[in-house]
Length: 412
Image 1: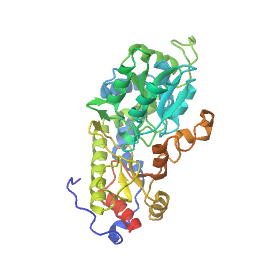
Image 2: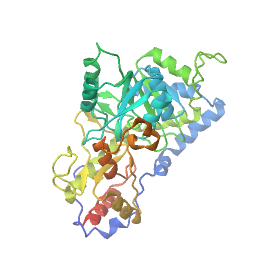
Image 3: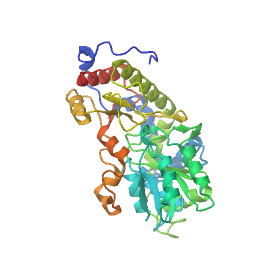
Image 4: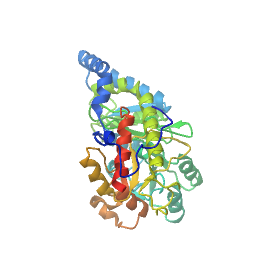
C-alpha cells in the first residue's frame, strides 16, 4: 500500500460516486481463508489422520511456537480466551477473598474471570488518549485506599495496544515491601504487540490470549493460550485445564475442562506463520486511515488527551504510545453523534461496531459493587463515542477511502 496517500479527492458533502458504492464489511474472514485454504485443509487432515483430537502433539507444538513468539518461555493452550484469563489469574495466586484491580472499559471476560477465580474486581478508570487502564489512577488508589487483599493488577491491552507496562512495573516495585501483587496481562487482543521492545505475553507473571475467530490470530472456533516465564505456573495451569489432574484419574484440586482441541491448534499453527505480515498490514491500514482523516478536516490537530474536545472536531483518533507496537485488532475512533453515524454507515453497507457500549462498572451483574454513573467518567464518555471501523489485513485502500469519505459526508 502506498505510504504517501493524498487526502480524499472530494470535500465533505461531495464524495466520489465510485467510492460510496462500495460495501465494506467490518471483517471478512473468507478473504483470509481463500489465501490459506490449502494449508488449512492439509493441517486439519493431518489431525484427522492422527485421530488425536484433544491436546496432543499439535497443541504442544503450538505452545512451543507461541512461547517463542512472545519470549515468555512457557505457553499453555486452553479452550478459550476466557478460560485463559481464569488460568492466568489462578496461576498468579488469585484465590477466593482476594481482589484484582482492572479496567472499567473492556470485554466482560476481563472482569468475569476475576469473579470466577473467587475474587472481587476493583474497577479503575482509563486514560483519555489510549483508553487503556490508567496506571496513575491505579497508583493513586494504592497509596490512598488500597483494596483489601489485593492480589493482582490486570491491565488490558485494548484494541491491540499495550497498556503502559513501565508504570505498572514501577507500581509493583514501589509497594514491594508492603505487599505482593502480580501483574497479569489481558492480551486477548494483542498477539504480536510490544511495549518498549518486549512482547505482549512476557510483560507480566502470566498473560492470556484469545484466538476467537475475529482476533488477529484466529481459530476456527474457540481457543486460547496462557504464557508465563515461570515453569511452576505453567505446570499448575496444565493441571487446572484438565480437571485439576496431574495424571489421569488422579485429581489434586478442582480445575475445569479447559483443554484445547487439536484441530484448533493445527489451524492456528498455519496462521501463525502469517501473523507478522498480517499485523504489519493492519498497521499500514491504520496509517492510511490516519492520513485520510487528517486530510478530510474531520479530526483535530491537537492530541486527544482530554475528556473534552476543545476544537469540537467531529472525529478524534485514539492516542498511540511511542513505546507501543500497536497491532490494531480494532481501528477505533471517537465520534460525535456516534449512533447516528453508525446508522448512516450501515445504510451504505459499511460495517462498524461499538467496543464497548456499557462500561463494566455499570453492568447490572456488578451492581453489588455499589458503583454508579459518574464514578468512571472517562470510560463512560468513551462508551458513548467509540466506533470500530473496518479493519482486517485484506481490506483495500479503496475500501478505506470509502469509509472515510462516507464519514465526511455524514458530517457535511
